[in-house]
Length: 203
Image 1: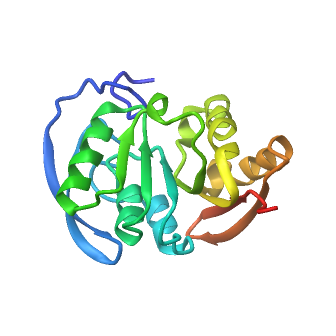
Image 2: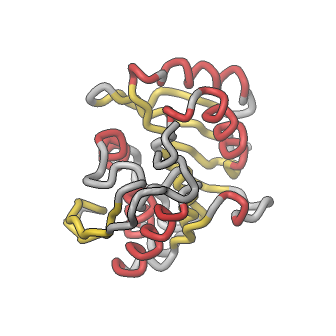
């Protein structure tokens, strides 16, 4: 794996930041991006599918963007639900810094951009949105799912966007088999991507 891959905590490439304009919560908005983070030139297609097709988030609650990059999912959640607290989690410190800067510039006050070890261990999430890092490999991906999906609050849901030819159906089966206190279903399929819904029953 390249030392400058977006999975790196400290990317090796120069931190050269630039501003691009992207659609977030129905409005074109300027954001800062940089190399060494996921999809530094645009909102990638998978994330775009999730943002366009996942159900509208609740107006308030505690949300999680797992693998936030420069912040398109967390920013959308915070802009749509300004009363919510949105934890934007990533291993990449540059990505987290960009998310913080973008949140401040857009007035998205509810975002907490942090590494996993700064999320309180007893915190439960009403909503999780994620374009999970499939290319880290199954062992790491499954550990991420095993760590975070069980932290759904009763009645809470996670929406995961996964490319069909990168293992969406096998991830669906794995969640059903390994996390059997949760309910998993395919919400929709768009442009070669699946959106999986993972739900903790309210009862």
